[in-house]
Structure formats: C-alpha cells, structure tokens
Image 1 (cartoon, each protein chain N blue to C red):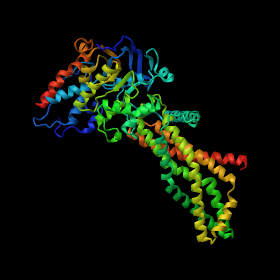
Image 2: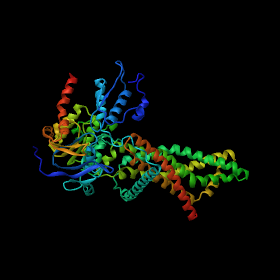
Image 3: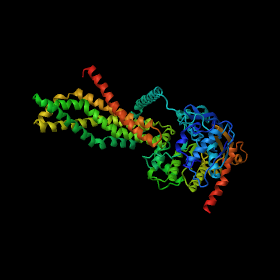
Image 4: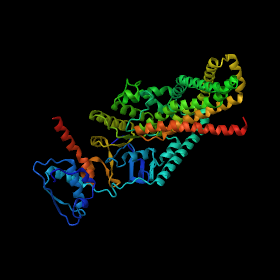
Length: 355
Length: 260
C-alpha cells in the first residue's frame, strides 16, 4: 500500500493505466501494508476491483496480507455475480427519447379519450340515479368547488374588470368615447375572460385537488379496493366530479361576470365620471344573449375539462409520493393549456357561425 | 378436518405466467386450491407473490395461462355480477374519507347486499369480530396500523365472500397482533368455510394456519415447492425452501436470546 493511501481517483481508472499486468495467469495476490495501516472503504473497494478483474473465470484468487475481516468482506463483494453489461446503461438517443415521449403522450391521450367515453356512457345511469355514486362525496365536491371558491372567483373577476376598464379608459378618453368602456368590459368579460379566468382558478384549486386526491387513493390501493369490488373507479370517483364541475361552472360564470362588470363600473365611475345608471345601460346594450350563451357554454365545457383532466392525471399517477406531486402539477398545466386551446376552437366556431 | 370441507376445487391456476411489461416474473404456476383451504403464497422478495395475487383478483392480467374460480375467469365473474372476493390489501387501503363503519357498509351499499336497514348492524357485527367494537365512528387516519389492518379485514368480510385474499396480513404488526390476526383468520375459515389465499413472509403464520403453500423462487422465476409447510420443511426438493422453512427454530432461539 502506498504510504499516502489509495487515491480515490484510481477507482475509476483502468488497471492497465496503473501498471497492473494483463489479467491472464494471476493466481495469487499479496498485499503489503504497514502494521498500523488504517483500512478504509476506498482501499477495500480498490482491492475488490482488482480481485474481480484479475480472477480468470470462476477460479478464486488467493489473497494474502489483509486482515481476516477485510478478506471476508472482499470475498462477499466478489461473490455477487457480475451483471452482464452492468454500468453500461446508456441513455437512449435523442430520436429514441422523442419517440418514447410521443408514445407516452399518445398513450395518455388515448387513456383520456377512453375516460371521456366512459363518463359519457355512464351519464344515462347517473340521470336515472342508478350510478354507484356516494351522496356525501358529491356534496363534498360541490362544496369544495363552489362555496369555498366564491371569494377567489369574485376577487379575480373584479380585478380583471377593473384592469380592462383602466386600459380602455386611457385609450377611449382620447377620442371622447369613454362610455364605450362599458361595452369593452361587458363583451370581453362575458364572452372571453370570465370563463377562462374562472376555469383557470378552478383548475388550480379544484382540478389540482382532484388529481392529488385520486393519486393518493391510487397509492394507498384505495382505487384497487374499489376495482376488486367490481365498481369502476370512473363511475365512483370521476363521474360525480365531472358532473359537479360541469353544472357548477356556468353558475360561477354568471357570478364572475357580475363581479367583472362591478369592477369595470368601479373604475369608470371613479376615473371617467360615468354614472352607474349610464354604465349599466351601456353594458346591457352591449352584451347580447348570444354572448351570454357562448360564455355559459364555454364555462360548462371548461368545467368538464378541468374535472376530467384532474381525475385523469390522478388515475394515471405513479404510486408514490412523487407521483402525487407530478400528477397535481400535470393536472394544472394540462388544464390551463386545454382551456386556452378549447377557447381558440370556440373562437373559430363562433366566427364560422357568425355569432 | 372441517365439517364444511368438500373436495370441490374452487381455484384452478393453470400454467400461469405473471409479470409487468414483457418479462414474466414467475411462470409455469399450476395449482388447485381446494375449498376451505388456507393456501399461502411464499417466496423471496420480488419473486412475484403480490403480482400473482393481483392476477388472481383481476387487478392485472396474467401474461399467459388461466386462473379459474369454479370454472369461471375473474372477468367472467365480474360481468356476471358474481359476489366479489374479500381482499385485505397490504396497506389496508381503507377509504380515507369515510369512517370505519362507512368503510364496511360501503361495499354492501355499492353492491346492494342485504337489506339497507340491516347493513349498519351487519357492519358492526363484522367490526366486533375483528375487535373494533366502539371504534366505528373513527377515521382511518386516527387508527393504529394494527387497527387499520383489522378494519380492512372487516371490510373484506363485509360481503361474506367465499374467497378471502390476504396480502401480507401481518406486515407491520407486532407479534402479538399478528398472532391474533392469524387466529382470527383460522376461526373465520373454520366457522364460515371460506377459502383463504394469503401472501406472507411470516413463518409463524405459515406454520400455524397454512394448510398448504407454494414457494415462488425469485431467481429461477418459477415455483419450486408445493405442499404443507411442515412436510416441505423436511422433504422439499429445493434446499432454498428447506432453509427458508428451517429458519423458524433458529429465529425463536435468537429472539429468546435477545429477551434473556
């Protein structure tokens, strides 16, 4: 043993570089070390490696000069069979990784579409009150996604209406068209922004909680316990959530619209000197039934999307604590992207239908 | 041995391979589990014991071969509306949003078992059987590990199943609770004539309650022994099985040493 000990970097260097003979024909290894040598794990690992590389076939190398306890340890380390290709696990190339991601994505999409199909097929059973759904669960979901979300939906929509009014007021005042702030706030919020913002709030609150809840149940085998009873987790867990959010979102939408208009009114009244009555009259003239219908429909669709994506991510989660975290994140991210993508589809359809 | 025991084979496992992905963890499993038998699936860690149980209960598909319950596959049973099995999951898997009592009444509600008015009383009886009378209104999170296991056993018994699956029932239990659980399983089998399939590492359970066992070898990827634990301890072909089963005496001697 060198006086300064074994340099840990030797563990990673090929033996030939360190001046060892080629492995053929070595049958014994003698280690020389000072009497008070302190054996550490670096020395042990280095010796184990030499023994492993120098032994030819199954023949054991005779070892001398090491304490008996260390010899025992070395024998143990060398006894485990060398895994074929161990340490040679390489990451797949970029093309393979893209392919794997695409396949994973396609599998996820297929699972989501089949979840959607299953929920649609279960709707008649739910309508006839024959679905295996727990009443308390539905009430809990309703409370969680409605009354407990009221404050945040109100705050977000008031601020959104106020911001729109501020931006509009600055521009429109130049042309003496300040009263059109009411049109701007009314149409923008009723048709576009309130459904999107309310859905995004719901995705962050409720969609994430659905994903976390179902992913945890998955990890605790609670979903398996349902499956083995012959009860579909989609029927028991997904259906009530999807229906609750689909019905609740339009209500939250109407509630959100009212606050957005109040926000606009608040800013207009304070910066443009427009009376509440005039503002309200202009708003009523601007937002027609069609805008409300489109906004309400969007809200219902977004609600279903948020619930289904939240549940989907929960059901697809890995069975671990990390799985719960990533399912929650994925649920929120995918929901927000989905909401905006669907809104674009709505815009194209509305344009084509000229509404 | 038992008044209710008949020679009907309730579970037939025929040349079954199980695993995840493409590679089988175990293959060539063939066994007939008789009615009212307590049958143990034993093996080293990662040998596919729980995977085999999952395939038997229909949670995953066997890669090849057939698993039949009175001649029907699990899928056929499920579509026919046959009564489900009782399953005690390793973690208990109690539904955390419900009380203990609701956990036991839930399977009855879902499958419309017995008269609605009788369900709570039935559930209380099952909970009393496992020694949880008085804890009906507690939440699973507030129970100790052993109580959770016992509550889960009560839930597994809710529908009076013909077959009871137990996935490592004594894992995480103190020796006393584990023995009490063993006693309970044995009493249930003797009293109700149910067939019990259990996955276990516990030699004590194995010797005290299992009628027969199968040993899955994790290295050979196939079963290497089938028979009663006492008989296999003496005359199993595989030295691994003999060594595994012989650990009991040594273990208790060591424990005795520690206690002394």
